[in-house]
Image 1: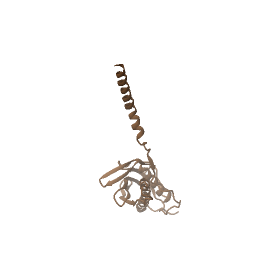
Image 2: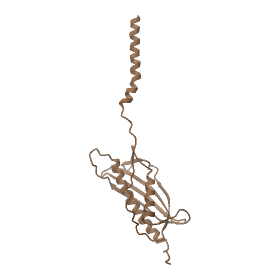
Image 3: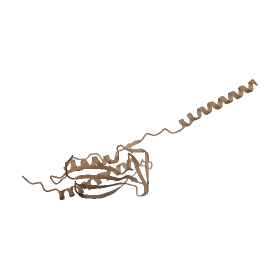
Image 4: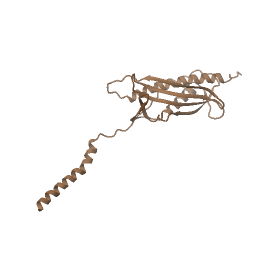
Amino acid sequence: MSAAFSRVAALVACVAVAVAAAPGCALTSKGEVQSPRFYSPELAPGGTDIRPSTPGLRLRLGQIEAASYLEERIAYRVTENELGYYDDRRWTEPPEQYLRRALGRELFEQRGLRRVLSGPGAILDVELTAFEEIRARPERARLALSYDLHDERESLAAQSLVLEVPLPPATSPDAERAPRVAAALATALSAAVAKLSDQITSALSQTTPPVAKP
């Protein structure tokens, strides 16, 4: 009786040890959780040449916002009605911050417009409505925005822009997509800001009285 009891106790102890060890084994067998990787869709700063601009143009940057679905996770579109996100691929900042910085650099540094901080004058509001990878062939990135240039009384110019840029070719069959998406969106951002700035300076030139010469 004592020997049988000892064998049963030993068996129960072994089962208990196995059960206790199982979760640990399961945890150690799983792959390590990957930390997010971050990307920036900004081109390296170029030259410091000032683009020609009509003297006396003044502008205040108003609301520079993004659609609610645009966030730090990189978005991709499977179809026109289906959107997904990379769980471990993210932007270093919210997308609208890249747009605000690019607009400030293009309008005030490159084109020489005077930046108004308060008071009456023309105000530029911009909403970023698409900033994503398009999975459908051909692979490309899409940037879309809408803007409204207005003063205290009326809208001076309003329009929507949509740009699509092909993804750079993959350097190898297993090349990551996220860096290619970031490169394509950097190109799209630069082109969109230049085109928007052309339209803004043109609209301001038509509504700003010429500067009187001394």
